Image 1 (cartoon, rainbow, N blue to C red):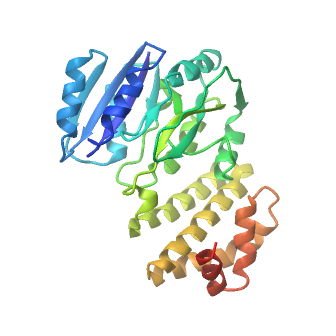
Image 2 (cartoon, one colour):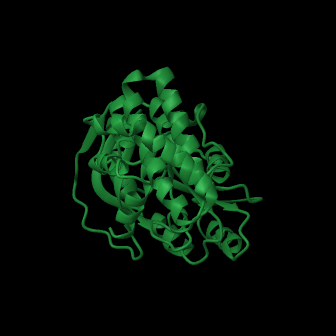
Length: 311
């Protein structure tokens, strides 16, 4: 059985589409755990109504604690041998679970991932039988840190063996909890099976983390620093990949902080950029976007911001 965990917070606009997409799965052996994270709209009522209408659906209600808390509570309640996470405003292709479970049956101790479709309107393409690309743990972590296509750090669009969560959980009280956890989950598995098929629809909503500036977004700097320190202790071969991801986070946050007048944060990021840019330029595995940013930084802060305004 697959336990599908959906954290719900003020998601009344999209919850029906999300739940219906799970109910329409061709793989029938699943349970859906709807975790109401202290919603103030009609989401709590809807969660209970879905649970009353389908014995495979369970409703949990808690005081608002954030996405990590809701996911962890869902894990505690799950009975499935495999676990998936779906955001309440997203949707699954009807064959998502079937396709991912087919690969899980061959590789039961791997995390199974799939591609995702990003947009405002659901638009799935036809899905044919597709092979999965097997990656060992270190290779999978490196590809995510280097931001390669075909892998990503999101908790959704992955199917996890239950055993991963015997020791590992989402860190609570932070943003970017997916980035903070992906490498720990991979280290607790035998690797990644990447399925090249757009089986998950990620909805671009106006109020999402990517679309709203909050200074708390600077937490990504601490998380990427923590990843670098972790790799220095556990896997020296992944240190450069971790440094590349940290450089990318600082470069992006430098632009955002500068645009929103946070000079203290911008100064912190700029100091890191200057310190690490040479290493980024001469690392053959670093993505071209990072190299371009590193090279541009030699022209100064104003040049970086001017180019960003006109891109």
